[in-house]
Image 1 (tube, rainbow, N blue to C red):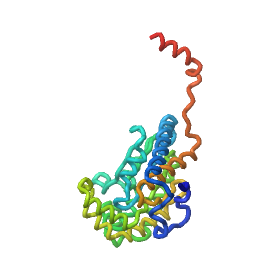
Image 2 (cartoon, helix red, strand yellow; image 1 turned 30 degrees about the vertical axis):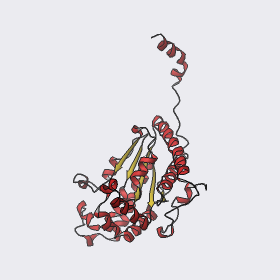
Image 3 (cartoon, rainbow, N blue to C red; image 1 turned 45 degrees about the vertical axis):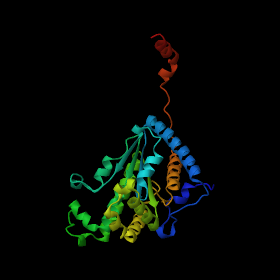
Image 4 (tube, rainbow, N blue to C red; image 1 turned 90 degrees about the vertical axis):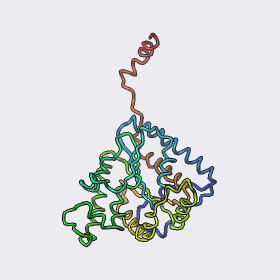
Length: 292
């Protein structure tokens, strides 16, 4: 089995998605991949316990990918060993009426992780430079001054929005939030097969939406805008990782391993020392409890 190097997936230079693999064969069986994932998720669970006690950092995991790319099942499998108090998942849908009364980042600020916890954004603030670029008419719902019609949305508008996102991520990282962003890179053919399974397997019928087919027609547009967003917003403080997603087991393992190895860079995350006064009286406290 070939080793996995998380740095191979990190976006540090300009990328072209069409030239990056959607599948990765490391010579491992499904059982081996599951064993590897099981090992890393147990390590992550222990790490989160330490983080909770340390109470200095929160971790934001951002997951983006086309429909059927496996975001939901990835969350279930990678974080299944976590204490339920230690991870919160947010699935961002179309903004509701209350959210539209605020700027587009407002609802994402509200969902940021508390110190000591993980938050997973299943679809993220990047929908605001992805879906809205494919469907710019959605921007009109935000009631932005000076944007009265689609023709008012210029390239400068999108440049400004990218800068706003970079500033948002810089601000939260400077205040103790560790940000890791993942694009689940799936092939168009693999999506076709997964949509067919939703239609053919009764237990998965509920997942199918005609809207998935409509969005699939805009596949090339989505790839273009994903590529542009990733290239414009991958940074040292909030890096993007492009992870092959045709093999769900492999994708889960890679992302779990990346999270674990990135967290190892924060060597200050340690269990707090016991108060010296308590430490000096441990035997007394034990004796008191033993006499009850």
